Image (cartoon, rainbow, N blue to C red; front, top):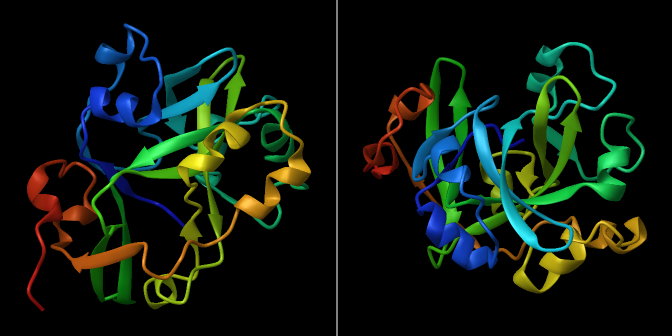
Length: 221
């Protein structure tokens, strides 16, 4: 799964990479960098209709038929293998897809009593674009989820799932609401073995309130 991530770039830098418009209200609705993003937090995601635009979404998808906002905390991830058939995700997969920028994400290894957090990021330091789905709920507003897939061999050392990362050449295909779903499924796979690297970090990351640059400081272990 993907249950925590970070964006160390500014909103302007994210928009430049995505070549996306940033509405004026975005500057006060969400602040980047953000070093410890957790479920239910407000996050930035790019959608595309007439033009590509960055919006604010609550992390944890709420389908339009949901009656309890707590449902979103159980839908922070969508499995790539079943999102085209699962009622919570299938309509969003057909019509409402997004890109969620991340500088890196966090996973934990070890036992329950001795868990080691890891910061996982792109080898070249560039932003990662996670594949996501979004919904607009009549009562609870805009929400989203991150799509996960089976891990690469490298990633399997850290977790049995990983976010789907999309290459630049696929962004238009993914974001276009008119793209046939059959053309999208092949995109939802693990990346090459050399895309990512990982650093052990302090357990201060365990608390989402610890939102500061030293969360990312590598440990010597």
